[in-house]
Image (cartoon, rainbow, N blue to C red; front, side):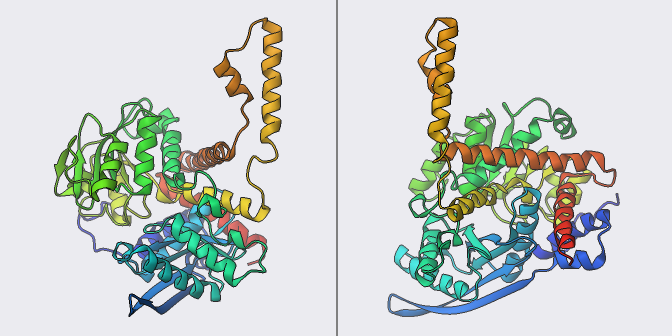
Length: 475
């Protein structure tokens, strides 16, 4: 492979995604017409509107991009960011199509954004803005349970999704599936348990699955499991926090660095992710946290030695200027597009394994799919079978006690007889999804001589499925 120049001209987010797409399309030998149909966004809607806030009229601009309709509804979050633009929305919509395909979630890809800094507005004003934006999207069917279903993304939470959901139900009272027009809602409004943590949990499951394969771990220059592995996380938002929390608490990994806007924390002995999050929530910043060394130039920690680097902030954080300085053995992309096309090639040449974003952060859309299924089926998970499972478990306990003549310890009896609730089923379904998807990616990575990295393998898996869907309907 030819060496890339150290400093490459910056490409747009969409151009980076398309270049990666092209590599896989060439391997698959896709018909040029088919490749173009898959690559391009099918529809883009830009809206400008005004809202009266505190007696003053404020203008806003937002977008919704529909990338692919090979499956319906199309799925994709809505982000609130002052840096949002059309290029970002198009790129994220494309990644959603590939993400859904690679983890076998039967959705097309879409994405939305509103160009605002949500921290500038109080709750009352933010609700007015959100409801007005929702009405504009609903009028054009860019929010609909059967065609286009948004969810939370950067800058939005269950609160905003609840406002959007209520707006849709108000405007479309005759739609029996109205509650399924939005996912990531509060549990009291048709949401599902486990959705808040879903993306971070999926990151944990994806990394865990990588470490279940000693051959893959060896390729990264590591050995053993996750126990004791040093992790640096960029971005202690919802995804970074939950990924770090579960990897340390459940898998024995060690978060040695956390990078945020104000700077970074470093402690080679390991940070208490929960304690850092509590400090951040109380102070509004990680600066001043007493149990670690604070580094003003936070992004310099991207280049610090570690086993796993988890960029969980925004796109383009690892680029041609710093890729040669990355010392991690594995870059696990929890954010969307954190590694540029040129940087990806540099990392690959250096033997650094990249676990790609549209696989690794697919936990959110996977659990959103579960929520959508729950909404359109109008029944919560576990309602029909939980007590039956408990009864069967109790009978197993009775049989064991009868055969041994001894009582089964209470803790073990409880575990055997307890039926799975909604959270158990969601976590089980998410882990199964991440494990099966990684196996498919890995099989392509190892069996196809033309594929020499996980990202290309994931693209090949996704594009093959999307192309087959189009071919089967005669397009």
